Length: 311
Ligand SMILES: Nc1ncnc2c1ncn2[C@@H]1O[C@H](COP(=O)(O)OP(=O)(O)O)[C@@H](O)[C@H]1O
Ligand SMILES: [Mg+2]
Image (cartoon, rainbow, N blue to C red):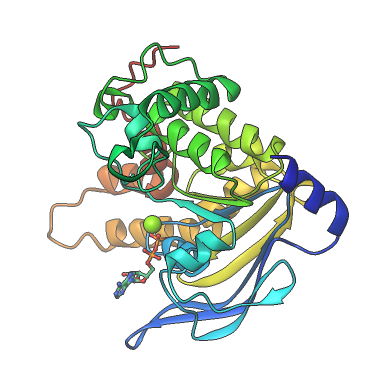
């Protein structure tokens, strides 16, 4: 990744990707309004927000899948409108989507090179360079500290975390400057999430600018340099690491004031004693556990999804 390092060092100032005042409509649904974000080489920008906040929409704009309806999108200081995902890739922007696009029955090395297979020989003797692909996959994974015993095993047999790691190693190998990850830890257990975050940090250390989408403030704070909070399509905050604590980030994510409001409303329901069988005690109980945000998040991030990490 020497090219990435030298460009980063040479240009220094300008962000790799910079969005300013971006809006996006789906028909007349406003998915994003006045959203700004930047990511520089060797930095991780986290985008936080609940379901429906507009996180995926935002990264689809960066990935060239959608066009923004207002605002500006700059890549390395130049205003750009991406025609399609291929154009994003040509600019060095690699995206790992929530539902990883892999072919489960194909070996790990085959997935690693999918769409960019090297060949050897000429004319009628031209064929896939399988040895090179095997070797390169093993080496690239090792370089990021991933020791897969067998790159011939079908990628479907890897754990969710390992598959995310292969996708990250792949982006680094193919020379991405910007790596965009949509909720890479959403379906993972605690241990696997840690492993994935370690490789996210490794990509940053290799000089890439990383955009990490998550609804988990703890995951974000472990690795993030900047934090952008989205709420129903608008920006609810933008912070650098030294301007916000984990507690404050968590509070903002959980929507502190909204939860207070909810608990008041639940108490009122209880007091009115309407004949729906809500007793005072159960409603108060609901008031306490009701803040579905944090509780829901906790259960989601600890869901035991193939947590058989092999390392
Ligand atoms: N293709 C689409 N067509 C219409 N509405 C969409 C589409 N994709 C997303 N939305 C809407 O835009 C909003 C933001 O969605 P999304 O970006 O997927 O949020 P997040 O990733 O934060 O959960 C939601 O209200 C969602 O229903
Ligand atoms: Mg999403």
